[in-house]
Image (tube, rainbow, N blue to C red; front, top):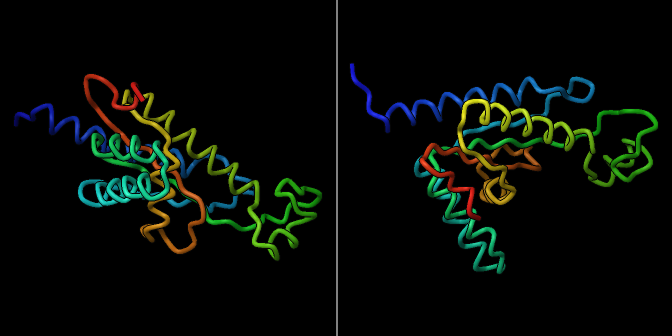
Amino acid sequence: MILDAQTTELNAIMTVADLMAAAARTAPKGKGADRLISMIFTGEDKDLVAARMAEIAIEEDIAFFQRDAENIYQCTAVLVLGTSLAPLGIPHCGYCGYEDCQACNQEDGRCSFNIIDLGIALGSAVATAALHHIDNRIMFSFGRTALEMGLLPANARLAYGIPLSVSSKSPFFDR
């Protein structure tokens, strides 16, 4: 069997995307509560999100959504990491801005531990991509758009996309 570069690079990206999802899943989480959501977008599904990002760029006059959409078209896959939100019941915290977890829940607040856990998971994922020399970038715009489009599970409240690319020059370099 002989595999060409396009095939091996596609295989590498998909393998690393899987490894990134595993790294995110095993990242430390507050009280061990796993609220992580992970999905991989490729092909038409990835491009549909990019198209909507470009529309948002025009509708809302947000230039970086257009720039990011162009990057998404250039990449092979996007790992999306997100989280649901539910207070962890940690006494004497208040990091969410409310007095306690009960108040946070009543006001539909955002538990800071859920958000921190997502950040740690994102860091673990991009570190894995970097270890395997896969170009990547964390993008708020992709995650936000995928949420808006209803492409993530109903309990997802925050999400970020990590586009992945193998090319002679990173599409995320000259932004």
